[in-house]
Structure formats: C-alpha cells, structure tokens
Image (cartoon, rainbow, N blue to C red):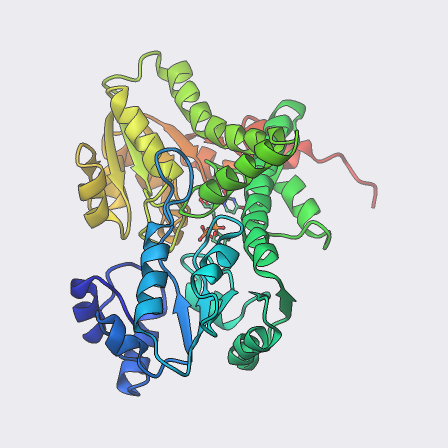
Length: 415
Ligand code: UDX
C-alpha cells in the first residue's frame, strides 16, 4: 500500500488508523500479523512486481463546485513513471468526473497498460461489511481481458458483476448516489406533507419500504444528507444535467429540500424563543451520520455552526469526533457526555443517530435541561416516551402527530 503521507504510513505499519471505522483496526491487525500487507511512501518500492494497482485517492470538490482530480493525475503520472514490465492493470476506485477513465487511459497509450474503472459503493461506518458483502461490483473496461482479470480478484466475494465501459461505470456511481440523495429528500418532503395531513411519516416510510421496487434504504426523514459523497455527486450530476438536458431542476430540488431541513430547525427555534441569541442549545452528534468520525458536509455540524453564528450558546457532544471538532469548529463548546451537553439547555437537538443517544434516559435529560424542547432530528425517539418525560417533542417524522397520542388516532375496528 502506497501513500505519499509518511506519517500515515508510519501509523499503518504500527496497526494504527487515524479515523473511526468499525472493524477496520481488526482487519488491519490481521493483515499485519499474517504479513499480507505492507506500507510504503515510495512509488518505486510499492509498484515493483505489482500486477494490479488500485487507485483510491481523494477527489474533493473545488470552490467552483467541480471535482479536483489533481491527486488522481499525480498518482497516475507516478504509476506511469515507476511501473516496469510486465505492466500492471490499473484499477481506479476514486470517484471521478464522468469520462476520466478514458482520459487517463490516453496517458498510457501504446504502453500496454489498461485502466479499468471500478467505482466504490461502500458506505462509511459499514465499510468493512460492505466490502465483503457488496451488492454489486461494477467494472468498466475497454479491454475484455483486463476487465475479467479484475473481476476474478473479486470472485471470492460472490457478488453480481456488471461488466461495462469506463464511462458507464463512472456514471453509475454518480447515479447511485444521486438516487440515494433523492430518496432522502423525497422522504423529507413526504414527512412535511404528512405533518399537514396528519399522516405519520414513519408509517408511510415503512409502507413504502416493503415494496421491493422502492426498497427500504434512505427513507428516514430527518436533518438531511451529508458526507463526502451524496452532496458532491449530486452537485456533479446536476452540472451534467444542466449542460446536457433541460431537467437539472430535479437535482436542484433535491439539494434545496436538503438545505430546508436544517432551516426548519432554525425557524422552529425562532418560533419558540423569538431571538435565538443567548439561548443555550445542546447539539447531540456532529458527524454526518453515526459510526463515523467524518464531519465533511455534516448537517449536524452545519446546524451547530449556524446557531452559534446567531449567537446561541451552543454545546456539542459527539461520541467520537471531539478531536476533529476542535480543529474544524474551534468556536463551539464541546461537552464530554450527552448529559453534560444538555445540562442547563433551553433546547436539545439530536443531530446524528448515534445508538447511545437512543438509549438516553429522557426523564434524566429533562431534569438536566432548563427548558423542555427536544428536537429529534434523526427520529430516534417516539412521541409518547418524550411526552412522558415531560419534553416538548419535535421530530421530522412524527411532527404531524406530536400533539395526539398514536392510539387515539386508530379508528375502531370491529373484531
Ligand atoms: C454513500 C453511499 O451510501 C455509498 O454507497 C457510497 O459509496 C458513498 O456514499 P455514505 O456517504 O457513507 O455512503 O453515507 P450514507 O449511509 O449513504 O448516508 C448519507 C447521508 O444520508 C447521511 O448524512 C445520512 O444521515 C443521510 N440519510 C441516510 C438520511 O438522512 N436518511 C436515510 O434514510 C439514510
């Protein structure tokens, strides 16, 4: 494994990982113990005798909203310089602008090197599980033998394989993430309509999820989607749609619904408190979802920062991301526990669905707070328990029934 960052190579050699990903430290320890993996910062050392080279470099979004492929280009030019005969197959896993695979393949023209596009579909927090149990492997190659050689590497995983060309493989990655983002925004709009017509958003999502054509994933209403993939890929597909179709509005609407979810919380606080300035706000969770320490494009962090800008006294607690938070948001107060964060709070906002939040004793939370408003931004609690604890409860998925216990809504059924 090659990385240009010497510090990281040193950590990996000692079996240490600088980010939170369940199961990964154990997997690394096993690989090291069995001497199946070694680490180097040197391209020539790492590439010698390689038959396949997987490229997994970041492609962050630039300030203009395009993908920055400079790490990718640098990796490819190093590979070109340091590989020897027999030439390896180069497998690109990085998310790239559609068409990149073919563009970089030109770098190797006439050199008997094949570039195969093999997008990565694993989700953070479940990366190890997703890697070993992928729903599909997509392989985009202009050369049948190279494509089949890559497929053979994955054969033990027994996953369906889609063989296609590089452009289609790259586009399928954008399309999958754009669809997941669309599902989340769709669920969020449903929950808003449900709020007005008196339908329970969770019940609607459950009914939808049992239809195999719709599927169960990404239908949880809440603070919206974030992370390093969905927002970035949505923006990339929107640009393509704007350039080549008259239908970019579809993706623009998905993004704007997503932003509106956060704005709803700010509006709710304005409605309840008048001025937000000076109010003590506890935010539980800072990462973009549970089981990761990733703060990139996190709706939770964006909301906390927005409230701090409105001069609220914001205290954040996150089970794993405190060290990163101190770096990216030094102005926020960071608590050591959920209960410490809610102490004296006028309002508590559950912003990330960490399992430890679902286990919080709501009565103890209420006693520790000075106010009573609980904004359940990730649908962790039910309205009845929150009310029993004396909390004034707002949730995106049950807002429509918040003042009416669920049993009272059921029509009588003759037995
Ligand atoms: C995503 C894709 O799932 C994965 O296939 C791809 O390889 C990378 O991008 P990831 O970014 O790790 O993975 O997160 P994901 O689990 O998809 O969640 C994205 C965001 O949507 C999170 O902020 C999450 O909180 C939110 N979300 C997800 C919802 O709001 N509701 C849901 O029902 C599901």
